[in-house]
Image (cartoon, rainbow, N blue to C red; front, side, top):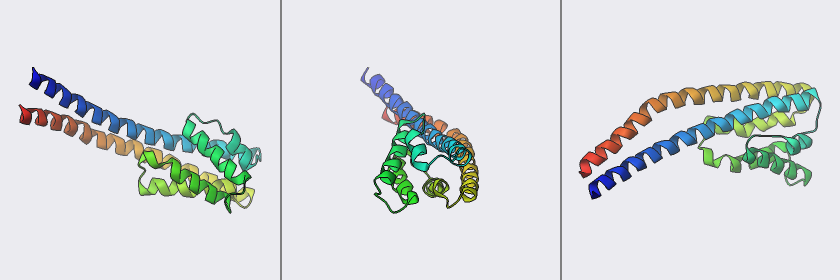
Amino acid sequence: MLSAMGCLGIMLGTFGGLWAWEEQQCAKRNYLQEMYQMFRKGKYALVGQQMRCIEFFLEYPSGRKEIEASCKQIAGKLINHEVASGELAWKTVWEEGMEPYHFSREEREVVLLSGAAFFGKNLKETEELFDIYQMQYERLVMQSRQLHKEQRKVVLPVGMLSGIMLIILLI
């Protein structure tokens, strides 16, 4: 009876670990997709309708509360003149906000540098920067999907086999 409970505990722990990994990968990809959407909406608002950055960040309707909160923090820093530039406000807020997602170095750099699109010197530069970063976010989402598929083929079977092996060793 005790060994059956131990086996069940090991298998549940294995499933839990694999589930947590899957959740983390999905959250990371969803975050990148939401950033892509923000750049699409930002280009329309700032270039098409010539909305001010602060207004956009205050009114940005995101499906993710943490992204909405980060946008409001950026607007707050700009309104209160807490930083020297808009790009600096972007970097400081997003550095704190993306910690739980375990981004790769490349993904981190794109997120931190992409704020330049919101703070271009003129309309043409702003539009060009939005186009560049939209393409980069789209590429990152595609890479994330592909990498997840490849890793999933390995992680799930190896995780299950290691759980089974642990049970065999303990019996």
